[in-house]
Length: 138
Image 1: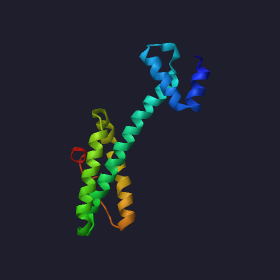
Image 2: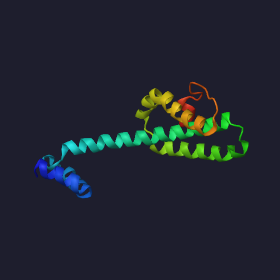
Image 3: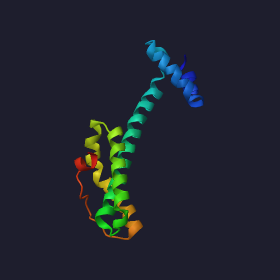
Image 4: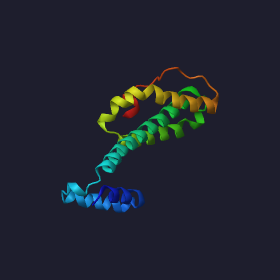
């Protein structure tokens, strides 16, 4: 199968492309593999999982900030439940190799959460993340 045909299938019928690629992999038929798009897809899986975990982490921080810095005690229980749901989501998606990048990105993730909470409640929040990564992940 030519590179052009593989790319056309990838672009026009992704599902069919996946079937063909799985078949070629199972048969160890290296010539029929669409290497460029396989590489792109695998990279995409990693980015997608990391993005999901960082998004859940940001939402968890957002809700922790609401509990810690707003006087809306009637909402605390709901926010605590949501924090636990975000932790469960993280537990299902995270892999050990994500931790160094999450640690590196924590302040940026925190600033995103701060911008949402500050906009919603008009309050001042700490300049730096008051939570450590380990407590947020587990």
